[in-house]
Length: 274
Image 1 (cartoon, rainbow, N blue to C red):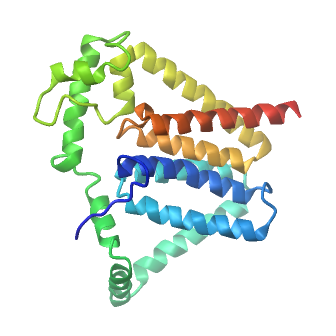
Image 2 (cartoon, rainbow, N blue to C red):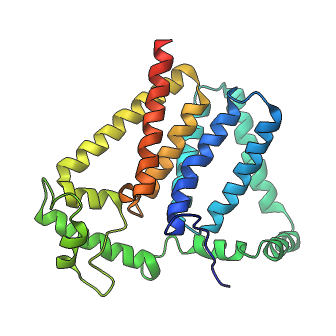
Image 3 (cartoon, rainbow, N blue to C red):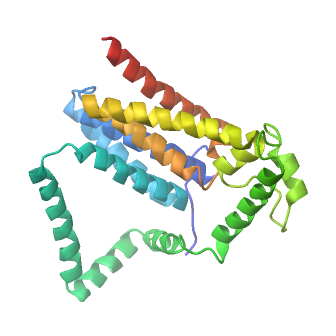
């Protein structure tokens, strides 16, 4: 089956996926708060979220899927951390019932549902295939990524502290080319950052992120602001996705990233002054 990806105005579908995993949690946070009191507008936003989720699947970006799932699980944990034991037990019971229900359903019914989904949503089979390739590192794009990462590690080894210079990876990388498709950007924002600004530059960025999430999560625990939690979820999903691509070096995406970081900090600071 042909794999047709959705990229919107981005050069690659992975860029559109990175945009979606920031925006979707933000919209969920808006619905969960009283910023929009109109029920009709909230329903419209819910429809938009569903459409965006389908677009996210259609990008076939495994890194975005991983980032979105991991960040959602982590933030759901923080959301329910202070809940009573009864509510936590209720969530756990529902999850167990869903899993048990799936396991004990007749096999004929399961196959019938799967076949129906494949017929109505033809891209579901491709999505399943993409998910199955996530752990494969001996072939495909995962294998190429590992080879790009090895090239970047060689650059870091030669320029460990201050790096080879800002925006010089595309030039210096050619000297470390190890295969036909090598010598380009490393498909990992953090390795590129370490190569260009050194381990000191990478440490400074990671320290900033640590303090940012520390302040954000502490504020959420004190105020239960779901909108801030939505912002933190989207930002963390983006950062996880950045492990598999250089989105922190894409002008379209890095502007959105820093805007969301600034918006989160501004919301916290303004609330503290009120």
